[in-house]
Image 1 (cartoon, protein in one colour):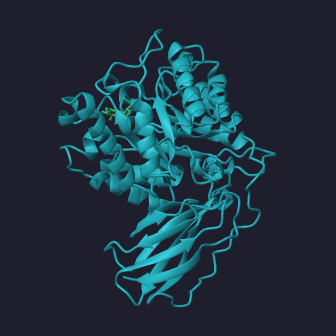
Image 2 (tube, protein in one colour):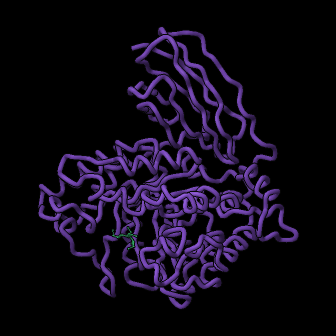
Image 3 (cartoon, protein in one colour):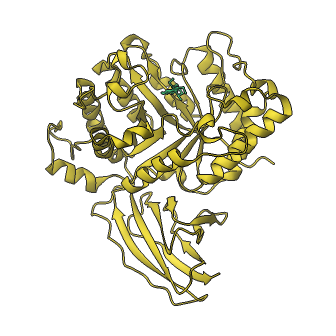
Length: 457
Ligand code: 9MR
C-alpha cells in the first residue's frame, strides 16, 4: 500500500549552521578567502556549506581511504560522502542472495567517525547489475530488484541520509521516454515500486530519483523527469528529492537556466541535490554559477563533487575537479569556497553559542540494566552520543529525541523506530555494550537524548 508519510523534521535537518567549525576554521585559515563584511568566512567547503544550511560532499572510492593524502583532504573539506561504486548492485549482491557489505560499511564507518552525512548510491539501476540480474526478466527480475532494495535499505537503515533509489531511468534525446532496460520491461511502475520498498525498509531516509542530462530546463529528458515527480507527488508515491548529477563537459554545458530547473523541481515539493558535479577543465565561472544557483534555491540541500583530486576522477584526463593530482586547491576550489562564503545564511537554526556538550544522564535501573549516556563530539549542526549498558550482556535501550532533532546515524546496535521517528529502541547486536548515534539538531541546539528504559534480555 502506498505510504508517503514519514517522520517529521527531516527537511529541516540541514538548516543549522556549522558555527563551531567555521570559527575554528577561521583561526586556522591558510589560504582561505576572507570576504570583508561577511559574518564569517569559513576556510573549508563543508564548513562554509554548513553555514548556509547545506552540505558539500564528494564521491569516495573506498580503496583510496588507505591514501593519507586523499583522506586528509576528505576529512578536512567535506561533510558528506557518496560511495563512488561500493553501494552499487554488483558490489553489494555479487551472487543472488549473497550480500557483500564490507567496503560500503567501511565508508559508512569512516563517515560516522567524521560526522559526515552519507548518500546511498544506488538501489535500482539498469547498469552495474551483477550477471545473475542481467539475465533476469519479468516477475523474477521485479522481485529480485525489490528484494535488493529491501535488503540493502534495511542493512543501512539509520545510516543513510538520502538514497538514490532509482538512477538514470530516462532516455537521452528528444523522446522524453523511459530508458529501455530489463527493469523497464518489467512494467512502467518499477520505479514507484522501488520507492515504496525503500520507504518501507528505511522510513527515515530521504528517497531521491537521480539522473544526468536533466540540468537544462528545456530538455525533453528534464521535462519527462519533472512530470514523473509531479505524478508521484500527486499520487502519494514516496519521493523526497531529485538528484541532478551535473556531469558538465565545459562552461558551455552549464545551462543558463540551471537555477530554473532547480527551483522548478523544488516547487513540486521535493528537495534538490547536485549529486555528481564535475566540469571539464574545471572552469571557475561554471563552478561558481552552480554554487550560486544552489544557494539561491532554498530546497537545494547540497553539492557533491564526483571525486576529490583530478587523478581520482572517472574522467581524469579532463581535470574536472577542485584539487589537482597533487592534492592542491585549484582556482575552481577558490571560486567555490568564495561563492559559498558569499552566500546568505538561512534565517533559522543558527545557534549563537556553541551547543552544550551535554549532561550525562543515568536513568534509574528499570529492566535489569543501566544505560549511561556519554556526550560525544559536537558539530554546529549535529552531535554524537554514546550509551554504555551495564548489568546485562543482551539488552534493549529506549532513547527519545526531542523533535525537530533527529537521529541520522547509529552504530554498534540494531535500531528500530516508533512511527514518529523520535523514539529509538536500540538492541544489542553482539558489538559490545556501548552503542552510539548522531543527532541532527535541526535548529534546536539545546535538547539532548533521554534514556527511557534499559531492559535486559
Ligand atoms: O565514477 C564511477 C566509475 O568509477 C564507474 O566505473 C562507473 C560505472 O559504474 O560509474 C561511475 O559513476 C557513475 C555514477 O554511478 C552514475 N552517474 C554517472 C557516473 C559516472 O559515470
